[in-house]
Length: 266
Image (cartoon, helix red, strand yellow):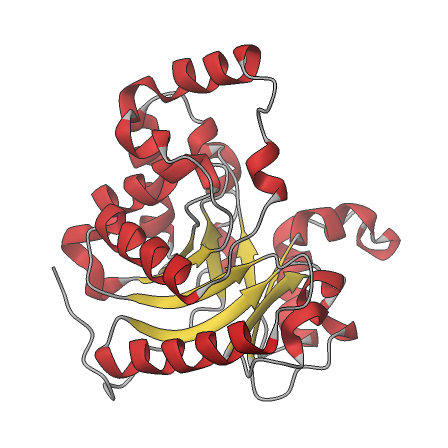
């Protein structure tokens, strides 16, 4: 495993991030690996995941894909949604397990309505992510969609812990992701290094000094009247001109769609 040395120069910023949030929707592990390999070959060097995506499965797949070439990619993960991680335990049986839980459990999906942002929850989640990702550090660790303001004590604990983890080399930066309404719950109490939000919310957030990452580009492309008749690659390229410092998350489980993004990578 490759360790991150505190104070080491960060690799050049990636304008485009591959979103692995839907990776678990691909039926086979082989298919997931083919998609990740294709994304890498296309030019993606940053990948976004979370334990809540595929109940640990998506991080696991990223670990298999990039564990041995960790220094070549940047990895983002999250913490705060306390899901059962059966995707990690049953990689080959994930679809069967999800179907069983969906049709037999009355509380299916209820865990996504809960949050836990304590310092101990952060550490437990991070250590699990590092195990699944097969590495010693993540480039970005994000609070996953806070639902309400945090008590002052919790905010202080998270700030102190995040700084310690940076010094120890386990994370490079600390951030928050979610809609503007979600992010505003904690934006005033924690000085984040990076903020990830829907592209239509970015302009409304009072962000100073933080890196900004936007998701939902395809939805914005579909909704913008001026973009009709233009290709998605042209639309995304225009966003880069409008906001040159903005990183954009692009996600797809279709290899054909992925191949159509070649124009984004010179």
